[in-house]
Amino acid sequence: MDNAVELRQAILAAPLESSSFGEEPLPGTLYIPPSHVKALRLDVHLVVGGRGVGKSFWTAALLSGDLRAIIDGAAPELENVDIVTGFSGRGDTDAYPNEDVFSKLLGDGYDPYDIWRTVMLRHIIDGRVILEKYWRDAITWFKANPEEVERELRSTDNLMSKDGRRKLILFDALDRTSSDWDSMDKIVRGLLRAALWLRSYTSFHAKIFLRTDQFERTVTDFPDASKLLATRAELSWARHDLHGLLWQRLINTQGGHGEVLREAYRSVVGELPECVEEVWLLHEEAKRETPFQKKLFEKLAGPWMGRDRRRGVPYTWSVGHLADGNGMTSPRSFLAALRQATSDTKERYPDHERALHYESIKRGIRKASEIRVDEISEDYPWVKDVLSCLEGLTVPCEYDAIIKRWEGKFPEGPDSIATNRLPPQHARRGWDGLREDLSRIGLIEVKSDGRIDMPDLYRVGFGLGRKGGVKPKG
Image (tube, rainbow, N blue to C red; front, side):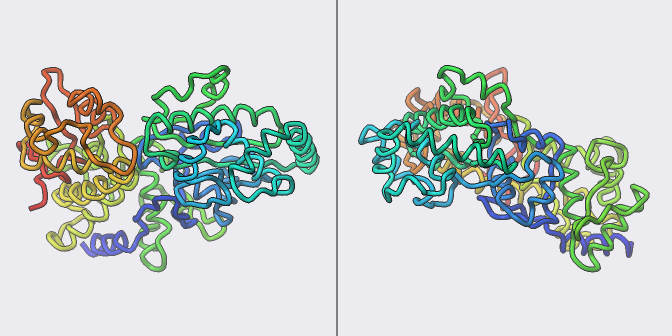
């Protein structure tokens, strides 16, 4: 009992909030899933993933001086690499054009391929050659002076190679380049072509983080795109990755609470985690789906999601019920659900023999759902309008029932859905196109009989019901 109370207090003190939108993560919270190591390699120029899987996280981590030692340990080839930002969600018009500048440049006939090559040149030669302040003038100079550009790049390439140094340019949040799909396709395609162009130099590299829906469009229909696609990395979080992330954060909790959690870890694994430069690191057995990892979560939550095995196992239940329609669970949702479950256990079941009560784990889905709805709405602002009007429905439900709600809110059709960002991709196809977009993002599931279902992760947050399922708040 006393140990459960101590563990509960320690979990509540742990750094379980997930960094987002390019915030720099703290050293103790950095966790590199084995499957993500490929994405960090220099020869991987294209990294693809859905919302919340870590694209902006890795951009921020790679740019962090405090974290480079940890990252370099997992990806040694990043040693002696200077890393800069070629585009991100944080506006910096000296470093790259923003959405308004892109719109103006495209409207004036500038080729995105030349725009991005000019951006790359500025980062590589530190403004020594291109002195023009405005992007239109810099691009014009770039196009008018191909020989000087080539000489400067080759000279810099040779010097960096001689010194054993390289430069990596990161491109993230590319949905912020335009609020129009056709324009964004041109911009992304131009960037991919520019990344291929950059490969002709030994010391210069580009790494482009793309949303899955951006990648699935026609952005790779240009000659030699296969050279980029051959090394493409996919960012995703398997169940064991999420549990590894959880324990990486728990063992790096500050003060006495950290000691409690590391002792809980030792009681299962047999020894304390390794401490390297004041950061505690997991053993390999705790990073993979091993008996050790399963017993670690059992230490916190017990063996069953009820009084016996019929209700499932917390280790699998806690991840599976937070998955979207594509079967993907985001780190932020997982950590938020467990923190809420801990708080709920403290309030409702203070005498429970484990740190987490199984009923509290179920309630944790509500908090995770609220966070996930806000998270997905950052990338797809139209989603809240489209799904909030379904509140009160019970899923699975007939497609006609959903269309009736949509027609009531958007009598002029899906094309009338207002958004200041990229609209639904297939809105021009009518309600069926909107249904396809929601399904591809993972917000809904279309069953074999045509009925519409919604994963608990979104259903709870948007206020829909399910017989026997976790109830929406209120």
